[in-house]
Length: 378
Image: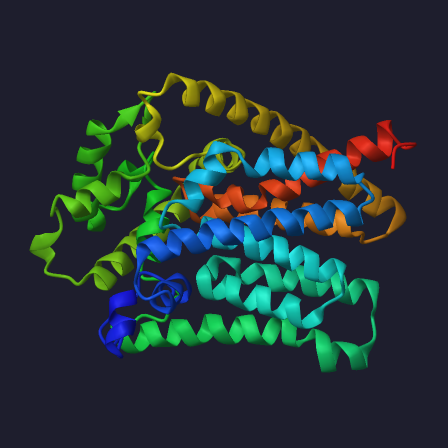
């Protein structure tokens, strides 16, 4: 897509990716080395902003510095910075978003929300959460109309505009033509229950599931393997058309087997969100020292995520009791809503959805421990 943008026209683009990351690549001269360097630089800025956020919550300077340096040097953080993936950019923008909210910088907040949607249309729910938080704590109709409503307008404009571009190029009004394929990934463990009219999808899907099953569970990538093997070439469909048919099959199959779908959402997709994932793990297989460090970091983060998960009902209960929509509750809701929504729409690589929000989990756990066990420490 970056090459198409550089050529001056995206006419005929198949609509798989949103334009945000590709525009960054173009801006950096289509040099992947410059992209990696840029990600390393904004990784440093992310650390500085996170330090300022911790200071805002009255965490001591020394502890804030130790936390940010310690977690920012984790191997999976460095691996994302050195990969052509959007996770590092997303992390920076989420941190900048929280910082802008804390500083009451409305323009910074709007900028972050809009760019996040441009990078990953999935984040279209974030403006509504932030908008609710700001309106709840300052319900002024004039302010809402003049200032707050733009929090929704600009991200929605970006989302709808890109969907319309895809409609012009593919005939489908979607933010990504991968949407149908992603939906049918959710059917991997009960695709055999799909209607007979979709046997042309079901048969190659089941074939790949038999080849790639582990612990009686199908690999979420099975449908991708079937596409890559050319199992649907005889249908003579473009990818957007094929993905649209996948979506139709998924809609009917999920509707008729809703219990199995919810079971998978809760016990697989939602659970996987709280895992810790590293890209390029194979490159470290021969270095036992790095693997030992990574295993320690992974387990440590899993413990923090588990504690955070148990804190969610605590903060919700506090809100129901006091009716105070605190910044801590906002952070909780951002993470929790992400966990729920990603588990509903995606099955596979769910841990990557959680990566940009790990700093929030660490911050909340640190803040809870400080406020409840070390109240005298400043």
